[in-house]
Length: 202
Image 1 (cartoon, rainbow, N blue to C red):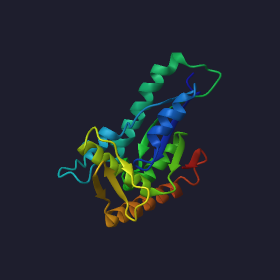
Image 2: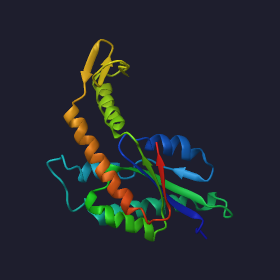
Image 3: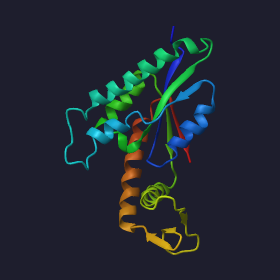
Image 4: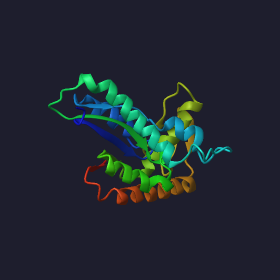
């Protein structure tokens, strides 16, 4: 009997705290086992719209559903003999917003509802912070080994590496925030009637 093995998915915008919440918070609970970004390889290899070759045969809802169902079957099989049947045990992974194609939102929400999946949606109140974190990560990779910090008393939003300052593009930042908040709100509305959805504002 594996009815007490429950499915869990954490969703949030890129650099929105999903990794921290899944690994540092949820994984501390004895009845929860969280894993990484199950869809990362699939999204990067086949569904990245910026790539010249976008494999439509593999970037579709059926492939996405197959990846998630295979993950749960494998993890639940491994966990079958290791859990206490008297209590619920949650197995899950995290998804960033850009790993779900907007055309798949409806099917994804329907699948979560039909499979009784618990959704924890991390909603970042200031999307611009995620944009800043993404840019900081890029600069960190370019200037490996150097520490970065945000200037506290500057009229510009910038990242400073010792004596080198990089201004953030306000036009690109605005587009990032508008797109992120639009698709985030769209998915929130679709999950509105899914009773096992928990919205957490950070």
